[in-house]
Image 1 (cartoon, rainbow, N blue to C red):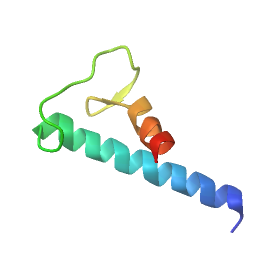
Image 2 (spheres, rainbow, N blue to C red; image 1 turned 60 degrees about the horizontal axis):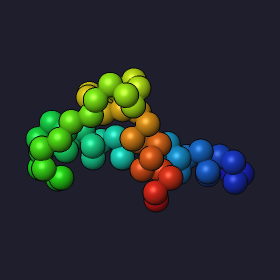
Image 3 (spheres, rainbow, N blue to C red; image 1 turned 135 degrees about the vertical axis):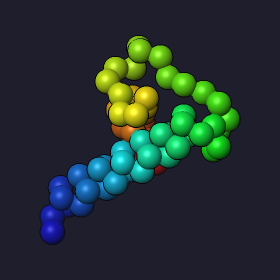
Image 4 (cartoon, rainbow, N blue to C red; image 1 turned 180 degrees about the horizontal axis):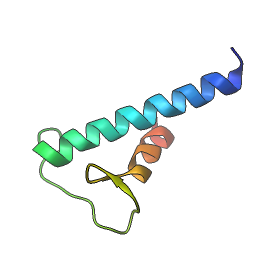
Length: 60
């Protein structure tokens, strides 16, 4: 496996886990308290903008 494959695999895992954690947070308020996202951040998956998943990758 090349480095490119590993990089994109890591990116996909970070984005998916980040979005999953945010979905749990938005739907239940369990992890971070009650919050929601507005329309400014673009397309959403279960009320969580895809951009937030990318942000999790950048932070990690």
